[in-house]
Amino acid sequence: MKLLMEDFEVIVEELSRMFKGKVEAPQWTLTGELITNPYPVIRDRGKIIRGIPIRIENFHKLEVRKHSRKVLSIDASLKILFDCGTFQIALAKVSCSIWMGRQRIYEAEPNIRAKLVRSRLEAMEFLFNIEVESAISAASRLSRGDYCILDRPLIAIPAYKEGTRRILDRLCEHFHMKGVRLIGITKASKLEVNTGESLLGYLLHKSSDLLADSAWYYYPIFRLRQYPKWYLGAITIVKFAPDTDHIFRVDVNRRDVIESNVIGEYLSEIAYLQDPATPGYPYPLKSCHDEAKIGKQELAYLRLTFLESLNPSLRSRFISNLKSTSFKEEKLWEK
Image (cartoon, rainbow, N blue to C red; front, side):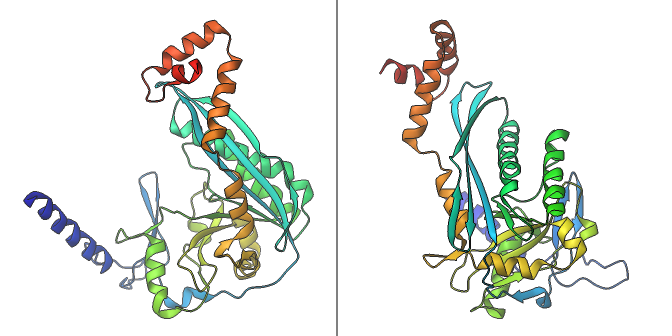
């Protein structure tokens, strides 16, 4: 217990140093100005990209703007159907619906897909692809000025295959040319400030005194020319409602931002999509998130369906590969 308490003391000291914004050494801009405020960073394959130092003037009040634009919302969830140790069978479920204001006007049947994968990266790439495919399929239902909201940041990480990265790039280009506003919203983010603290947590704390009773967004975070090629959106941090602590990373298609400063307009219209029962969370996205979930009973049914699709010889071999895993598929099959 003594050693544990000593560990706690070390952690407390590290947190104290982080939250006080202390850095190892003074830093200056290229023009020789001392940097006193923490700044956001992006880590790009060993390279650190330094964003714009955090300033009070980059907090903006967010006003709700009523509108009747169509909003395509897409979310997907991923489950492992079977884990065979050296490979897994991944299962993805995609929910897609279109809203006008706060009313749903179109809902596609949830799309369930499966793929044999050999790594977590391959599984995430599989999920990424079917989400983007769903957006492309539904694009014909949207017109200029409408929105497409994905429950993910607008990034295609370098570890993805080149073809996968091109898919998102084409989607961003297609929607920009069509005049559809492509937005990526995520509830979790690894963005940080140079002290090591979470960027979202830092801004939420900073805003508690400045804009305690207001919805707000923080922008800009990085200059447009600073983003790596695999970042296809301009990042902003948003609190959509005053009476909630939920904040989001919101990526706006960078092609839209280059042409004009549209950030405030887009976010004001997305803020209108909140449901009174869930303040701070755009309802079309929450609805799709709930509908994309794969429940225990559904997962069990799909496992049985897959096992039934195997011929007896292949099924026996497949179950042999499952015996080293915690899930006892052979017992499930015997029932």
